[in-house]
Image (tube, rainbow, N blue to C red; front, side):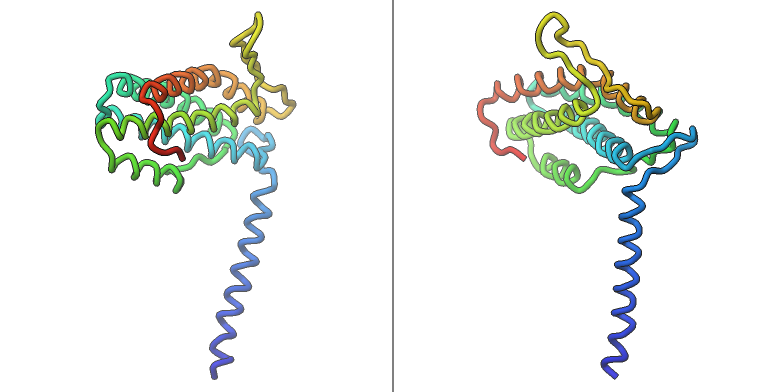
Length: 205
């Protein structure tokens, strides 16, 4: 009797594994958006990651406007809400154009950060928030630079160009990346400046 009872469980596990494997294979395949252009797994991942990062900046910015003790931190947070809301709306337009799904909520990493900051206040909140802003914007700059070329020095300093692509989906995403990179770079520079003004941060992610 015990062997018979185990059999359905084994079959269920096998079917579940097969379905998950099939889903993973689908994830690596290209899909076709409403415009008829191929949407790669890399393009979908880029949209998801950057959309989540943008949502996090807006939500954490709103929290900082209410909880921060330092006036510069409040001003920075206000800039986060305005700039990332705008960038998020522009990314949404590209995603909708090519039928790329957008995340409905933050991922677990950003939810944990949000919970952590919600339990802090005053100067401690300011230090940890600005430390998170440095880390987060470094990550976003790195992702954007995979799709846009940025001149950091010389006569063309500050000039940003999207990476060329024959794929219309990739080209649109690269164009978006090039448009927002200077703003995110400015955010990173400001986050570092304000964070450094507090001295060494308590912790880093």
